Image 1 (cartoon, rainbow, N blue to C red):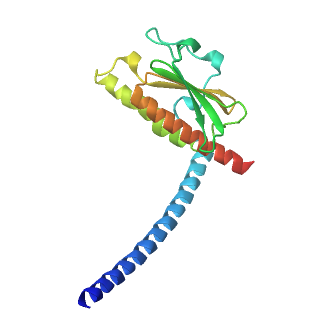
Image 2 (image 1 turned 180 degrees about the vertical axis):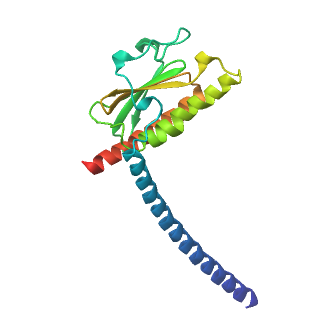
Image 3 (image 1 turned 120 degrees about the vertical axis):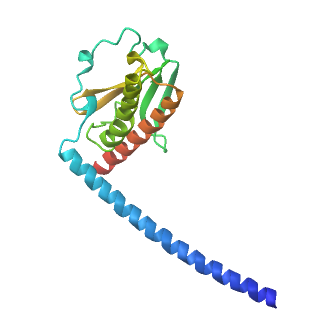
Length: 199
């Protein structure tokens, strides 16, 4: 009997602990939703104040692109792409195609979707937190003499007005390719969700 009463007491304690966990999870979920709402608000304010940096603010049209450096091309010719990766939503909706070269890539966005450069989280996440940071990191390595200037990570956003047509990147390794594939797909999917909700 004693063993049974001890077991019952233990179950009672576990049930009480379970309730506390459930309440805590509910509270955290509520806080998370509030923070996401605040983040969206901050993003909107930043966009309204012209929060644009790097090359995205005034990207020249494709015809005005500067010539590539002597020791590498920004985007290899089509025959040099070793892999073509479709970037789709979780439901299979096409977002873009990623053309992967030896140490570069080109992302061609789906022509049937109007990806606007001002739609979050393109600037705030992909440009500011991914592309610009990779470039800054390589620039620091070059300053320290650990990387040649022509090996610095660089990117180009090709636009028609506010619409993004292509994202060109050079000087990447397999690790960065993996990160870029994931980051670009996630960004485009979030942009597509916003576009659908606004239409």
